Each structure stands twice: as C-alpha cells, then as structure tokens.
Length: 144
Image (cartoon, rainbow, N blue to C red; front, top):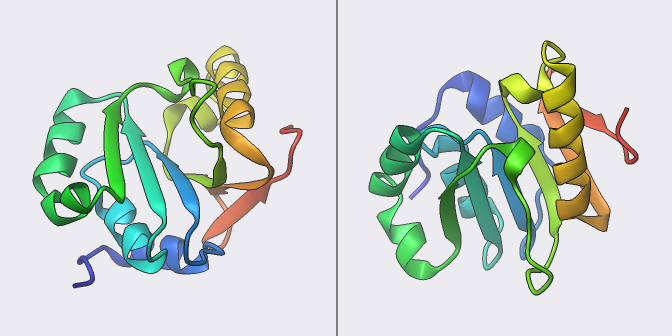
C-alpha cells in the first residue's frame, strides 16, 4: 500500500535517487508521510526518521505500524543538531530534509552543528538532499 501524500512531498520523494536496500535518514519527518513513501520504495532497506517534536513522532508512529513492525522504519525524537550515531550503527546512503529550520540559513550556528551531524551520519559515498530546488537540491560533501 502506497501512503497518501501532498503533491509537494510526493514530488520531492519521487526526485530522490532511491534504490532497493538503501539506508535512509529523514530529518524533520513530521507525521512520517515522506518516511513511509521512502520505505515503500527501498524494499528491504531501512529508514530512520527524526524530528525534534515529540508530538510529530507520536503521529508518525501511529501512522506507521506496519513498517515499524517489519523493522524497516524507526522514528526518534531528536533535533538534527543533536543527532549522533553510535560506532556500531552503519551510516546512511542518503539523507534528506524538507522545511527544516536548522538548515534554512536563518540560524548559522544551528546549521553548522546540523551539517556536522549529517556529515558524520553519511556513508563516504552518501548523498544529502534538501528542499529549495525544483523540487530538491543536493548539497555535496563537504557541505557549504
């Protein structure tokens, strides 16, 4: 079953270079719509979706029971500038963010911390996409 999504979210996810088996990190997942779309497109892959809002994470979990039960999707309450991976967790092939305040240029100190967290979470060949393009744009490592 393919989740329902706004045209903005659907266009963004359609533009991501997703492939089966990927490990994907979504930043600022809100109620989890994009995370569920990505999960449907990566087969046996894995999606970790984070948001700083506990309420958003509650909504995301409530709408994602099938994917959560299958172990292909996980939600965590954490801001990207505070996000870390332990040394045992594999890094991500792809990271994406839509409408995330810490990455919109208005808060340079937060953005610096957020980009550092993202760089540490990405595999060496990993790719990072944000909104602001048509419908997205890629930021190359090292992030600038």
